[in-house]
Image (cartoon, rainbow, N blue to C red; front, side, top):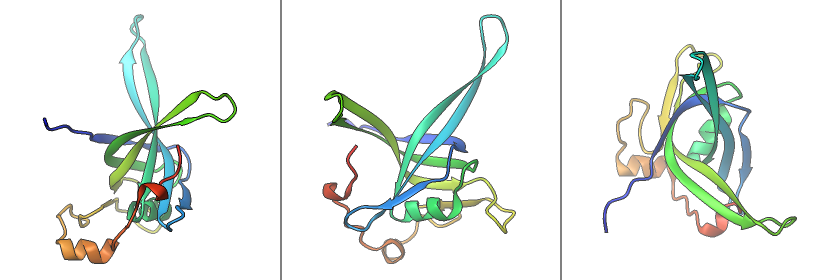
Length: 154
């Protein structure tokens, strides 16, 4: 099978404070929206701005970081993968879809309270971006044990 890639890189501003909850298995989940903007000239030569909103979800340690350090207006750099879920809408009976970015790397670009520095945090890496030894990462994050039953319905 040919190699495939599902990687997203976003740099933008958080639209509202992250919503935090737990799965039935106890895994912390954070949902938030991130705005990215692009500037372009329209047909008349005037500058326009277009904003795109992205649905982000973080699990376990990523959700803790989002909960503890991110709020509305924060500037974030994130890396993750695209997932799309579907379900049958109970009211209309039609199939509904939701596309999300599952975050696995987070860099906080807005200073946190009491700090003048930005802070980069990524799963499996230290604050300088170096890969942690397996036993260090295992000790910090533990065995997540996430199954399909733990994931929220779309």
